Image 1 (cartoon, rainbow, N blue to C red):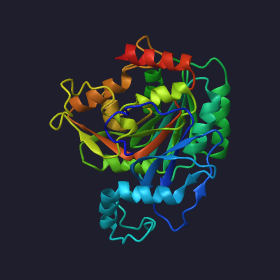
Image 2: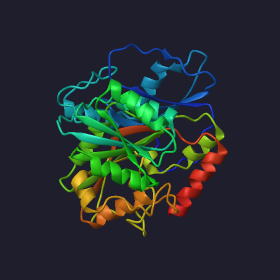
Image 3: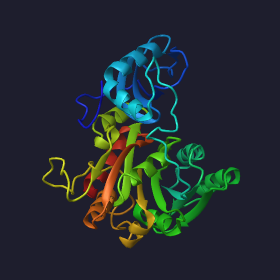
Length: 355
C-alpha cells in the first residue's frame, strides 16, 4: 500500500512496527526480527536514501520477510526506481547497487548549519534526541539546546553531558516561556547559514541535513524547507489515533514547491492551509531571511495562550514575502506521538486554539 497525499482511511492498529528499509545493497534477503508484541509492519521503503513510499506487511514468527518486501517494493515502486536509477546510469539486477557519485540525493556542501532543539523539562526524550543528532552525516553542524523557562537543572545536565562528548552541542536558556520565544533565542544565537528546527520527541535521520540542503537548492528563492515526518511508534490507541489523522507531511513522498504564483493545491484558503506545507517538528529557514521577517510570533505556539499556530503563521509570512517553501521528503525525521489519551487530548486542544 502506497500512502502519498491522501489521508489514511482507517486507523492502524496498535502493535504496528514502524520501520524503514533501504532497497539498495548486496545483502541477501532474510528475515528481520521485530520487537515483541508487534503484529504487522509499516515499512518506509527507500532507495539511496530517497523515500519511495510505505508498504504494509504482516509479521510472521520469524519477523519481517525481507524477500517478500523486496519483491513487493519492486512491483509497487517500479516507475520511481527506474527513474532514479536512470539518473545514475545504474542497471537494475535484483537489488540496486549502493549510491554512486551521480546519485541525485548526494549534496556536497560545507555550509555550517544550526540545529535548534527547544525543550522544557523532558530530559529523557532530549537525551535520545541528542544521541540521534550526534549521528548526523553532515559534519558542519552546531546543535543549540534551548532550555525554555526551566524550573530545574535537568535539561542543562543532559545537554552539558552530551556537549562533553560532542563539542558541536551547546546549551542556552530562554527565560521567557513559550516555544516561539525559545525558537527566537535559537535564531538569535545561530551561527549557521541555515537554521533547522526540530523537537525533543523526534529522532532525526542521519541524512536529515542533506535532505534539507537539497530542498534549499531546488530553487534560488527557497527560504524555507520542510520534510517528511514519519510515525515512530504505534503501540497505543492514542498513537494510532493521531497517526491516522496526520497531515500530508507524514505521508507525501514527492517533492513540492509552494509559492503565491503556483498551484494552490485545490484549497480556497491557500496559503492559509494548515497541514499543507509542513510542521514545526521538521522545518528549516534561511537564517537571514527569517531574521528579516522578525522570527516567530511570540503570541503564538506552545506555552502561549494560543498554544499553537506559530508554524502556519511563519509559512504564510515566508510566502507573502515573495519567497518559496520547498517540501523535501528526503529530509526525514521520526516523531514519537503522545502515547496516552490525556496527553493527546491536550495536544489536539492546543492545535485547535492555535488555528
